[in-house]
Length: 147
Image 1 (spheres, rainbow, N blue to C red):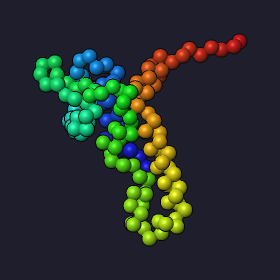
Image 2: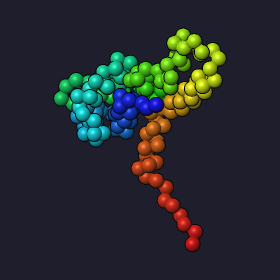
Image 3: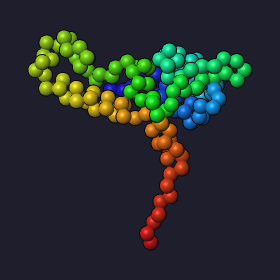
């Protein structure tokens, strides 16, 4: 069970935008270079994020994209749902009618627990949390050794 590049690259691009602050737009070609994502693919990811109100674009010589709302209000679950749709480990979670055993299937119950756990993690992480995690990795606390 893997997320596609849409969710992975989309979340990286949004993190890149959030790290730059919201004072001026960030050009897509700069994001593409820093994140090593093709510009054409990045443009396809940005369109649904604009439509969903996660980011906004500004045209012109100093144009680019910016967050449309604070990073603390953008949940990772929202990003994944926009770019991937719902994440179900197996088809019968979303649509129990695909299998006549759904109502008595123990493994379906376990896959449902996996889905709920994934949803919970994604729901509880904001873009601001990601910024903070990035900064912690960028400047890790020094390790002190007792000698």
